[in-house]
Image 1: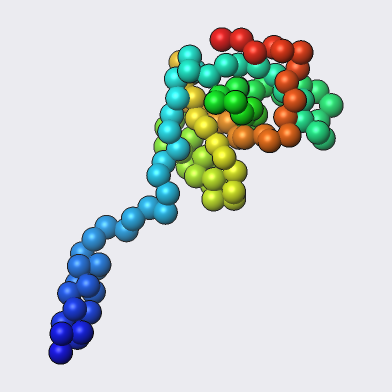
Image 2: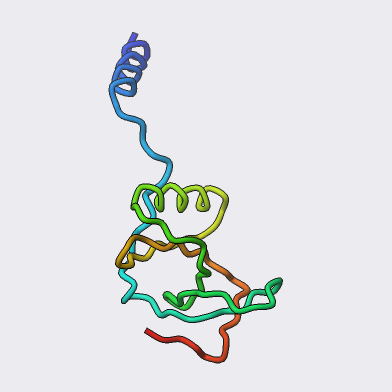
Amino acid sequence: MVTHSSSQISLASSSSQLPIPPMEPTPIFSQKLVDRCHILLPDTPKPTSAIYYEGQYYAYVKFFPTVETARQKAALLAQRGNSVLLTRVPKGLVLWVYEPDAQPVSSSVSK
């Protein structure tokens, strides 16, 4: 009898709760907190715009004018196993993806 009432309670409480998102939204950093640079990627002949944050390089993916769209795309990349960052710029946000094989272009790190 106790087991039966426990399951009823848990069913009732779970149906009244809002769905829990699978992961936290990607944090948004000020552009001033990251170092801008260019990187070389293994299969790309030209340097790519990037940022350097906490000892890791993140390649430019795309600019988004709204937080909602930027967070949706960041969540999609994160679900696919990518580590991503968002930075705020004057007209919107920029999405960056972690590149473990990136090589800096002639120490071009700047703020």
